[in-house]
Amino acid sequence: MGVSSEEVQMMDGNKVQLTIDKLKAEIERQRNLLEEKEQEIEELKKRDGLDCVYDIIASLESYSTEEVLFYAAQILSEVMDTGDVAIYTVANKEYARLFSATSAEARKLGNSIKYVDMDDMYTELKNSRIYVNKTMDAQYPLMASAVYAEEEIRVILMFWGISPERQIQAAVNRLKVIETVLQNAILRASRYMSSFRRKRYLEGTNVLNKEAFKVIVKTFFEAKAKGMTECALVEFVMGYHSYEAISIQIASSIRQTDYMGVMEDGKLYILLSNTDLKNAEVVQKRLKGLGFESLLRETVV
Image (cartoon, rainbow, N blue to C red; front, side, top):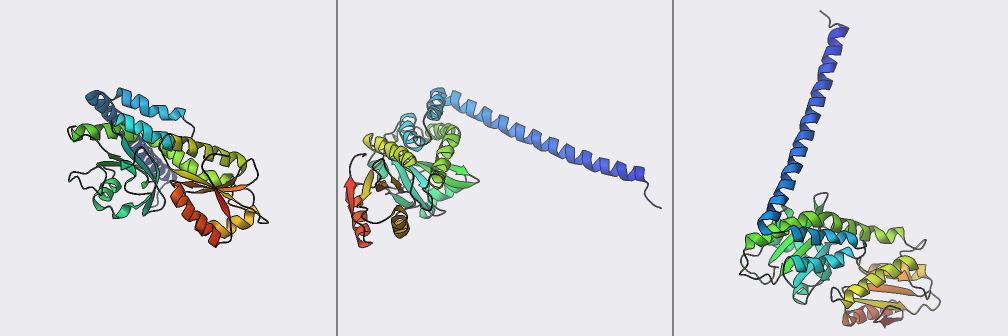
């Protein structure tokens, strides 16, 4: 016995209604999760008196995108009550590069770390938990947290110098609030910095135009003056070489975190991030080996 057209329409209607009901249930579930998260944050703020922390972290929105990752370290230092904060940006799925730090102590792990080999810390971070150095291992920060995008770690926040007298749980609660509020500002900055160059290259090169490069150099040198980073500016002695020729020849000799660009004087420069003058001299020697003479500039030209 066949199925009538009315019965077919009824079955189709039931399927549609079932789909709608499932969507409504999922929307309601997501709404409840969001409300729970907001309540959790409010409870944490009340429990630890963190209203001021929320306001301070939210103030990062007032900074330009280029400045966020520098000033985040300074603000984190204030709200976590420690002078030793480092921010590392993930260069690939194994290594992270120091972007800014508030002290020599916070720089002690070095400019580049293979964070996946930092077993205890990595295990906690990849599972979206805050790492606490309970054994006080000197090779690890006292506390660490991560900022994620598409379930991948993009930025790692590290803290030293937190007084052992302070309750660890109170510090963890504080950092939970910071993570939530900081997420959007840091990801906005991190994504911006990663796409900054390709949108502002001179045609046919990986050289930033003078407007873009000026912004980057100014931001780095202002952060350097405040002790938040190290950087150096290397000027090429151009000779008969073109921007394109130089950029192609040295592309494999500079790091992803360095910037190449032109300034108002029409000359070509490399901004070496997290590099002091001593290490900048090493870069100079490497460039000379490739056939390029260069000069070190300690100030913005």
